[in-house]
Image 1 (tube, rainbow, N blue to C red):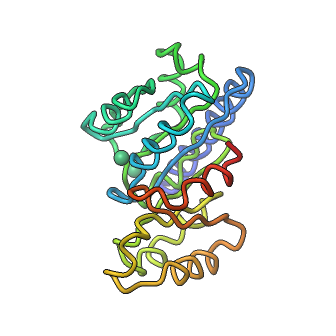
Image 2 (cartoon, rainbow, N blue to C red):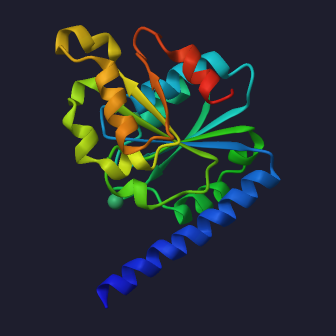
Image 3 (tube, helix red, strand yellow):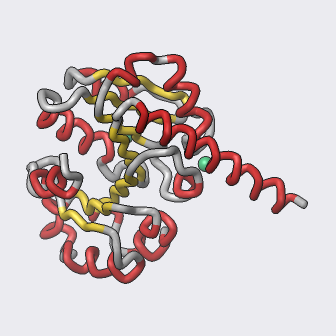
Length: 211
Ligand code: MG
Ligand code: ZN
């Protein structure tokens, strides 16, 4: 019985995600979800994209965070409109996105919506939000086993960013080995090797996102 209840929760989320997708399409808004573990660099990547693209797009950001406004405040400092959803739980769901889009008119006045999910490699993968793409961020600093330990995260990725390649030498890992491991789990995901810190790989990320 419990399994059935959980299954229907996923299905209800999926239907709401489809509604969100239609609403965003009607408004000509491109939407990208960014997900991955805490500390992988999701917010840092949004900051860099915000700096480089804020004159080209009307960017809006939804920062999902269980308790704090740290991420939202970082993005606001870059001069990009951002709101926080205090999830209270360990993931965003499509109903929270619907509520935010209803309550914050400014979110529907942009043309590029970036949604940062809660830093959690597990359950956000199960709850689609209604975006065009899902960008998964992992970090070399978390070691090579994170990929095999979180196969569903990798399988959810339209694009996978392997961040913190500036640490490769110190960590004695080859970013290409990480990429090969990602590819073995998800042969269709696009992979970008990147350092949000040095900026290496950012032009490739922008190109991969067709932004
Ligand atoms: Mg963050
Ligand atoms: Zn969760």
